[in-house]
Length: 208
Ligand code: DGP
Ligand code: NA
Ligand code: NA
Image (cartoon, rainbow, N blue to C red):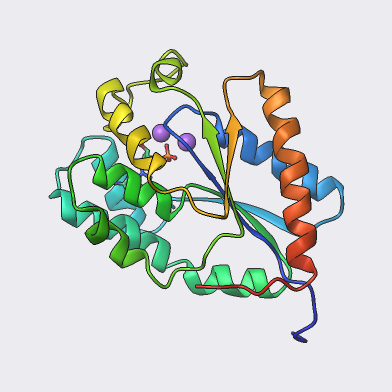
């Protein structure tokens, strides 16, 4: 690729369980596709890899792992996709990613693991251009369907995750009110995402 070719944007959706990230990422995918952008939607954990299958079994309470061990597996699962992620972005494909390093740090530190220890294995992964935090209270999220199926979907734990997320906000972060009707959440996301895709396409350097 020529260095002046537009690169894709790395856009991350974060939030508590049942905040609506998954349906919003598929809506964003179709929106950008219809506008003619090269775009893919990914998610972490990526349960299709060997590491991802260990994570999936842990989340379903079918296996038990030390808190540090599972933390490193989640991180390894992001590392195993790093080079593909970089080549997609460099070739001009925008990636919309459902959860990333912020989940890694927020969920593990909510268990009481040291925050700096949690951040360390994430260093060197690609930095997102935009992090969209779908903001909803743990109580409201718990009222949504399907809650409680997996290991972390417990109100008391999600309250701790919400506290951890608050300490992770940085310049790439944007809060979105996820308690609004689905179409209104989508509307807020569309403008922000389109702006990000255009800025990155004009040469904002990729970092991390
Ligand atoms: P999801 O497939 O988005 O529902 O995520 C599965 C669960 O795993 C969800 O409760 C969030 C949690 N999770 C996602 N990424 C990480 C991570 O890197 N570390 C830890 N400890 N938990 C994570
Ligand atoms: Na979940
Ligand atoms: Na999800």
